[in-house]
Image (cartoon, rainbow, N blue to C red; front, side):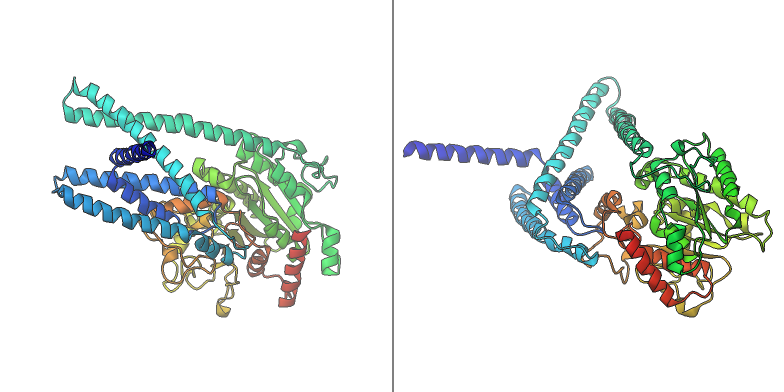
Length: 564
């Protein structure tokens, strides 16, 4: 019995010493801030997340919070502010530790309700649990790993600083060692880690782009891009371009919908591997468009695809139904990487490709008689929107304006969108702006907001479709330190009432939302609904004799096509 008691006391003593060493090894104020950052990261953002993703996010927040706490302690000591006595410190640390424990547990306890607050708004099934303890476990592993990595850097800094201090003045050694370690970290992060990640992503998505699926056959219609009669070789078109060319409503389907003869829609698509330069791609697209008779249609759309080369069927099919196939759509691939990667790597590619293609098409279009040429429109989703909005600047088209465009999910670096949104009418929210009298630019979301009380449209009409829950739009670097306008006043209908702005935290949360922006149901996030595209195209193209009954019938047709 005595031996068991001795063993128990021995184990207790070891655990106590271990906890004491752990507390000594880690900064108390660092742990305090880490706990608060961790708790804040559990609150909802724009999209629901899997527990593993939430755990990684919370682990990063924990590590950042720890760094903030350590930095604050350093500033306190550097400014030679008074340090409290041991008794006060012990008491305050005990009370603070208890407070932090209560905060962390209470926040973990609420994760399921917070997750479901987002899911309910997006018409997703609520979950029974968000697995808070799994989140906590993953977060601790990630957070500790990052903190230990930073401690390793500090060890390297101290080693270099010690060596330098033997040959140069101490303060100069501090600065020089900081520069050397910082340069080494940047070199490793940029030339090793980032390059490896980018090369890996590049090789993966290149293989996907080259892939040929069994259900995608080379078209036999001579008016189709990639056919034997086409100027564009089928094998040079990427997977998304092939989907675009071979999909969409057929002439027979349009005949049935309209109950009268319709036309076969024309689609032209030039892949990245078709020509070496964008200028050559654009010239080929123009020649192919001429070959198939695209300039003899009533509606011509210059569409800029997403980063992967994808064109949303909800947008392109809709305008073809709307105008009974009397349409031509021309597009050109500039990337095969997802939009969120392309934005980080080379956002200018979208703008350059869109301008190059538009210039080629527009230059020919302006040579045609004004009463015998198609109406010219722009379209783009995501990175395609960023490119499309900058392709037809007013100085270029002032003398001979185009007719407008439909742009959806404009990503945060979009310059035109940003300027228009910043100049919105004061009584309109950022997530659904109203710009001046609405004669040229209007915004809409899940609910059609394009009527504007009967206000008139001008000759050139642009519509932005954007959802308040789309992180591609509302992510911004200044989320680090400033509350965003889209959280001021009334928030969007698909944004959780529990979402709060915390410095640094909302930046991390929204950054994590970016890769998952299309993982939510149709009509939310970065996943745009055909019904909203239809409302936008009706407003922009103003089809003759179109009725509300026609709108509802076409919405049903588009929904049936998507289910099929």
